[in-house]
Image (cartoon, rainbow, N blue to C red):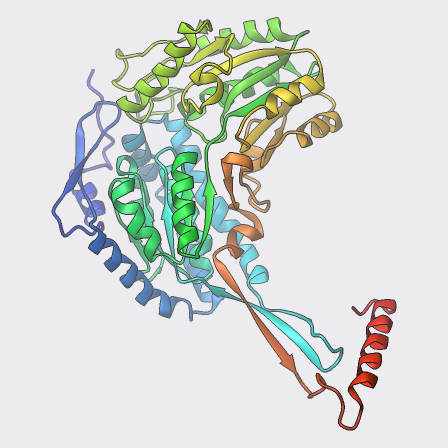
Length: 519
């Protein structure tokens, strides 16, 4: 039976969405339905001139938007929060159509938007409020810390979570008073385009949030050169290029990059819980999550039991192409990416690794499907041992001591996410804090850390710089303005007092203020 596209995703609807993309060249990119490979719509491709105009339009709108009282700006996001929930089914349809992910995962992706919006609606008034600090001279001087929007933020969003990253990263930037120009991946431009449409329905001024499309090398340089700040989620190699160009332009950049994320299972862990978590850690979003697990370190005393259970549970997963909630694992995003994942497995097997389950393509389901795969005997000489496979592939490893497990977990250039499982929570936390990673989850894979919107989330080592979420995720889109206030002219030596005497008085004053805890 042929797969039927969701009823909401009509040709007319798609044409309306892509009409937002500026393109004076007439060039297009064929955006396809991942499950079938059929062309959905011709996506316009933006030229450098189109990108410059997008920034000019956003900058003109931002000049007015930045003057709106924060309370008025937040009203837009309160309404947007409601619209995202109201139109959830359509958003999920778009995410599935363009990315091929299972509907369960597409739904979970949509939840990020109301969570981020809800957090900053509540938190922004306090974070962005002017803060008064003491001045150099007590009583007669003070300093006011104010937050000014940077201008227009450039966001480069990835294909694995197009709606969440394309829109969630824009929310704090807009709340802070900025304009935004987003470049989604060509493969997954539909859901962020719909998000912008919903934002404008909620009252966001038209022109403030622009979208440009094209391949990274064609679009990226002009976008970075016109932005006042850059937010990027993607590969480490591309992140280096973006960071270097942003540095030359003397603008800030937040870069969430790749990971080779480890999971440590301590001997007192509940294996029922671990197996359930491991399924999501390895195969959630078909392994296409920056924070997903690619390396599992299992204590020697429970290794064989875990391996048996995990393989059985993996083989019971429902893999399928459907616009309902039955499949647990969906497609990879493209045939090219499927081939890349397959090449990692083939390389590992050729160099001595063993496939415990999976290790094959699934053309009978769809053109970009690959079976959930568990490997054993993976070493650092293999592509799957050091590089980010970014697919439904995970390697199992034994260890004997905690120190050994921690050393193995840290034996990577990456440091984005880690997972530790154990019955003794305090001990699991101690182990987790020794792992060099920006995010660590105890008895969970990634959601607990990432969904804690009040805490900054980012990578260390080669997994990036900066963070999203928390106060830092809002303040990074602002410049701090220091307004110094002096009520009386007391900064110089009093008239008639020799400078040497003034020096003695200042030293005495500093000693007294230190003793009293004033300075």
